[in-house]
Image (spheres, rainbow, N blue to C red):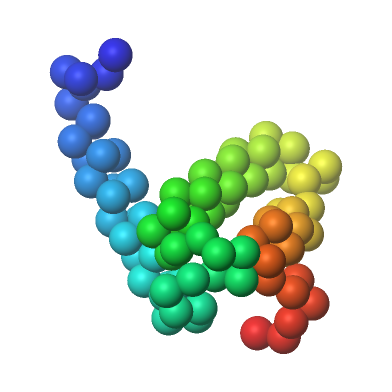
Length: 86
């Protein structure tokens, strides 16, 4: 476990703030429910996980990871029209 690690508090707080911020953005865009029925609070951790994972993969091998395309695919899983402008 990392309970005693000096950076644990920083990252715990950082991810809490990022999830809260993403939930606020999702709520502004969609209201209390996204097209797939999830709440912004349920979707925010998924969004953060997808973005973190895509960034790591792209950093390791940018030629084989289409970050914008993969993110559009994720939006499609949320029930969003990936071709919607904006």
